[in-house]
Length: 397
Length: 67
Image 1 (tube, each protein chain N blue to C red):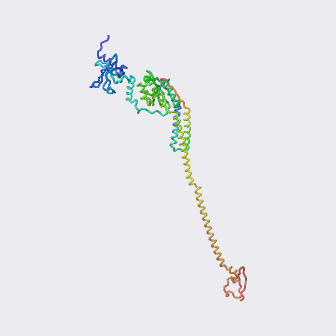
Image 2 (image 1 turned 180 degrees about the vertical axis):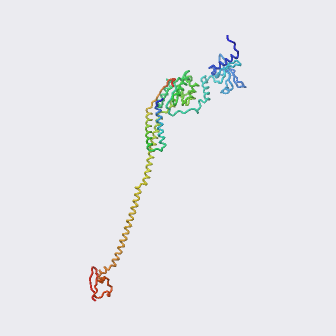
């Protein structure tokens, strides 16, 4: 028999037990609400949560109640999230509810909405942290089930679109209880592989099949990715928490592969245009150079000595022609003058008179021309000059 | 991932090709430099073309728990 315990000790112990228990600190309970009351002064809500066989007391604080989209009422079938605790002063076991979801929506959905809202508040989905995809990834990491159709689909598309990329498959479980841990481990493994793009993919399945991609740890692992990450989970209509956290959400694994790499055709085209540009640049360059050479040549030509010489030579020719002409004219002038003088001389020549029968009489001794009888006393020796010769004579009287 | 992959090679060559084009675009080069760049560019483009034509998807799978 043990020693008797105090009421306080038992109550505290029970309270602590509930606090440290892994289930009671964070749980969803499905049931029907009854005696739902909102305390008008405090704003807190008090109610019972029950099913056919059992009943739990519940409370929701004013701060949580204020966040409810709609106030539930007695008779509602609900999912309640919260923690179970023992209220020591009154010996009440109570569930402290922080949110209600209509039970029709299903527990998975309720969890989904709760996690989504929480991570969104934390900023895990923030648009400003979405990274652009590398235009031409070199090393693509596929985190997916190794034998899955999703992987085959992606490899087919990658091989067709862009066989230049290197692909590393990082295998993981994509469904079942161990899937979240496996995905988280595979993601962190992928982060060590120096890829420049990651695709997290899984083929289609039921909501439960895809559940691993709504796991909080998976979401946080995706958020930790050092490189852009594309999610391609399920079908087009499925949206998972992973999709919200990923940098880019692809509707399917195949679509993720399409988004991840450029088509080889685009590379071909790009290369083609780069080549054209190279050719055009060099052609232009050479044309500019030829033009420059041509205009420089023209410039040199204009100052060439040959042209200068030609010009000088022409000037020289001109001068020479002018000199010749001047010399010719001077000669001609003199010739004409000479001719005139000659004529005059002819006219004045005594020879013409002699030809008509006159004679020039000279003193034969002195040679002086006689113009008077006084100059020729008798016996003076005379010399008569006739047209074509001379005659000696003596004065008689 | 130590050995250069075809895409690394392609990217490197294509990057150099773009640099060559950029240098030619910038101008201010001697004729000899221009012709040298042109020759380089032509060779790079041909090699890029060859890589694209010969491209084949390389797939590897890591072991679980490796790394």
